[in-house]
Length: 384
Image 1 (tube, rainbow, N blue to C red):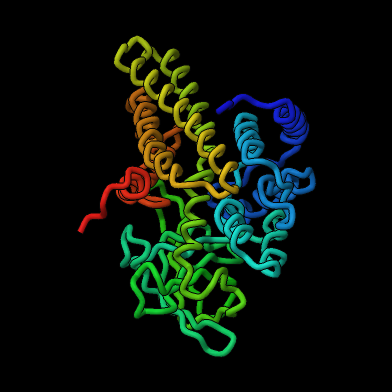
Image 2 (cartoon, helix red, strand yellow):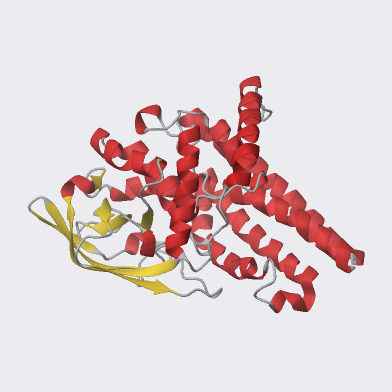
């Protein structure tokens, strides 16, 4: 396997660098972290610039509004935008990284035409309605119920840890449409309009003081049957496609960011005298090797997806498992370098350290990833 850029990929990288150098200085100041309407407008404004320049939905199929670029070109895009300090996907990460790719893979022609162009143009925001308060890390234990009433599903239940629900237009929602079926069956994947009657959003405050998560309560909310992606009761299979994108490629830009932060931590240590600690130097050196290996693993996963049709495979679970812990170790090292300043919430890296604690839970806990690796990669038997 050759991981070096081809001539075409080198040219793509050069054009992207030139465009980023031209447009990034023209961006307005970032809004306050608590200004969610402002953050939505800022993030969607950046997405519109990407769309106008032809960089939106790079790896999405052409008939889904994308450019049909290879996964490798998509990886180059993520690497170069992060290195240049370009805005991340922000408030619409679910639409761009999870729901959009899932609809591109599993949606009907009508569904792709309705939902994908507004995501790519920066006009609509999506959130994710997967986790539930009584299901823990077992996603298939969800209880939110949907029953047919004419051309609608009537949905009641609750979701938790719903990212950016307060500014979302749509929600990728998992519901149980057959309560008598085994728990991995009888589930359907719906697109729910967030302005439908019967939906209540209650923000949750995190350890870091932010409110990007919310509880969502559904009281007989009506969702058209036409909003179901995939067949009724086949939602678990569709969900596996969503999670493949979430774990396989959604964190790619963050690996580049972590490598940049690691360099900043080393410079801070040289400046405040902590660099004289040989144990700390070994720790930072090991983390450097760790993130370089994760980047190579990312390239391998992307190459594998390219070979098998575009959807990332179970290698994403290997990446997610190791990346979550490496990120926590990175910001623990930052705290060691900062010393008592690490307790200052206004100090760089302090909030990142707090948010890193969630990474071994979010997007599938580390225990779930280990189960997937054991059963689907190593072929070990399921526990009783």
